[in-house]
Length: 188
Image (tube, rainbow, N blue to C red; front, side, top):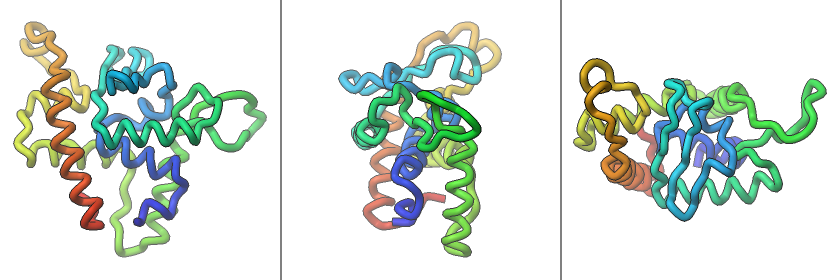
């Protein structure tokens, strides 16, 4: 219910970031061509990825539905999260700035006061990673869910993408998030 106090696109962005463990820049730069609803996958192209490698995030049913809702809200924009107002002479189709979500979360924190710790979009990754561990997800799979580079010999010898394992891990996490939502609790 607290997320309803920020705009719907911002609330959906928070949910997607929490459920996918993606980086804010990956989401704000996402275009509809990167979302495959039939395969339930979000492909992050190398130029949007921190490690400069393409990365595919499996989409759980709730996440796919949040993207569908964002698609309706984006109108004709090619971006998943287009800017809503034109500022500083910017014209045409452009993605939302990552700082816009930070500002929305700061305003939410001000409204909620002591009922909510201040948090950033990056904190959602940390929360997701902690819960993946608590759910018993193998460290390797949890790290791959976050698109962390695996150093040393693992990075050299293990080129498997673990998409099926990551999908199962994100399904577990999504189910836990649904329980939190149904109980009106927020994960810590």
